Image (cartoon, rainbow, N blue to C red):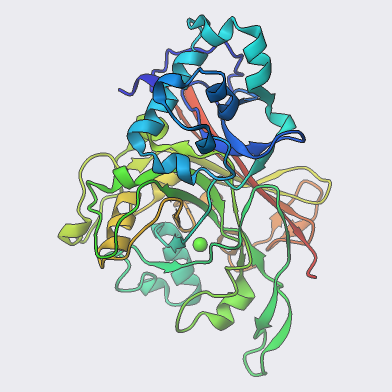
Length: 423
Ligand code: CA
């Protein structure tokens, strides 16, 4: 077992039982304050630990990391140090925050310098995303969409169970949680017998997803095996792949989604490491038919991550509209990465690969309004008595996620975005 994952560990920092950030998590993010520039931080309870100051004060001396790695507006350079080093940082922080370690605990002056209240910091996009890929790997989601738009008896296309379907997305419009997004405009074809029209999207949707962040590059021509994939995956974030359904329906044939998806995607700020997620691994989906040898894998490669989606009308209450789980994924991250690189496509540190909408088998676990309202035929009641088929102007959508096992809970925080009227 990874030492920092020990469920019996306790920190001298007070952590509430429902906190996403106990000492067993220690996720990495980039934060700034009114008086400080962006830098690397770790979340613990309701505090953020400033690694730039911690390193400057000598607490990380034995790791010999240049402070420019921590006084950085992205995690890319830190992640590129390699898993041996980033894991050693997590282990050392775990040791420093341990209730029995006096070094920082009993140094009042240092403590005052290295901690910020999480409510006083402004979180930044954690990585500079070079490339972004979106998969389509939840069998329940793909089945629902195929049932609605094609043929219920042949909902999955012939390739679906043989390869993890995906497309190349747009990195420039990936934004940090809290960023407001204007309703996209575009071309749609509301009436089959009339020409297309232009205007604000009418069927704006969220997609409940997670994304993994590449931690080690490959060279052009190289492939990553399923057994070697984990070495290349640094950690995970929550991901909302905002989708304009009416634009999508008209534009997507033959090359797939384009402007219906690339106007914005919202990510959560804290990158939860694969090390921290290790205790929550569960067996993967039974894949039938058998996959080709390069997609075969061994071990428990799915992860039990509980996922919630809320819609919050302007100044209103949060309404829970979906409770799903990452474990419903048919294709694992290891398979996605093996498939992505099998042709020699190279990957870089900071690349983001999203899961695709994560729907479970029951209607309360569907990961998009398209499915929850079943194309608008089953409106959802909000606590203020209004109804939603899709997302209204001034609604916020909030995704939260956490793992829980035998009393230990680690979480991701949230990915929140508010929709403003079209410009
Ligand atoms: Ca998607």
